[in-house]
Image (cartoon, rainbow, N blue to C red):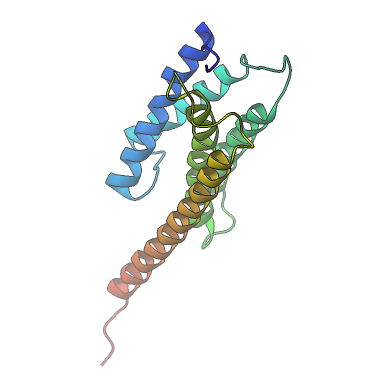
Length: 173
């Protein structure tokens, strides 16, 4: 039988659903998580809260891989926001910023995959731990989905930029 959730674990899980929904909404509606939109602001604030509540959870009594993912997530968010506001990297700036926010979503889902597969169904979980083949395969599939999605986002951003440039170019005759 799976380990029961602590009170903080239950709260953390409930909070962690918010950035998943906001991120999926941003991807579906805008093709990206946009920090200037209400859904992007909600995504960022709920993701930070999710990461912060995760720091109180530990089955080993100290820092673990999930905490490292949380720290990486905070770095991805901060890096993405800093890159978006910097005056350098003019042509790469939107791509790097977008990639950082998409990467934060990728990192959000990694522990969700492990926790879901090791806890559900409650009577007989599908996996016994992070080294289980089903967890490893699911994570590999998630990586492929992320890389495919990030590539598609970059392609669509480039296509839009070229279309805007072409529309602004004077007609030559």
